[in-house]
Length: 148
Ligand code: DQA
Image (cartoon, rainbow, N blue to C red):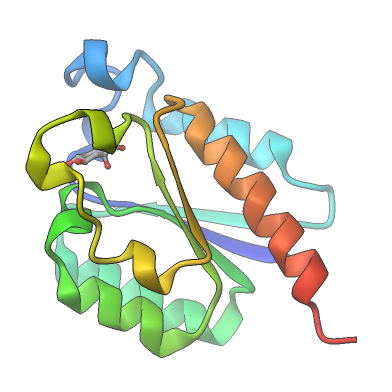
């Protein structure tokens, strides 16, 4: 059984209502359901959203106790939260960063992720499907790197 924590950062609770031309029409609930449906029958997916940096960090720390992998859209924290970066680096749980929008085609401040360097990889620009692609990549990575 593979256990994955899906973390959604600030403002992602507004998906479906927020800047739909950039982020699309899918709600967070739909995305979570799609991820559950895409996971294998024996995989466990837990999802969590917060608008607060410290709450996200606490959840990342807790993941150390139970999760095999972390799939995270850190929202705007992507671009400046050294605290979230340190939390990800500190727990040593393989992490994939995802973004609905293509952050590299947007404002310059979004081009840089301070978290991506401590992740396995980053997926950006495929709308809600970025999460699905991220989950696929994370599960494949975990399967390949599982201790024999
Ligand atoms: C985002 C991109 C971030 O720059 C932005 O602050 C978000 C959403 C995305 O999923 O495209 O809140 O992470």
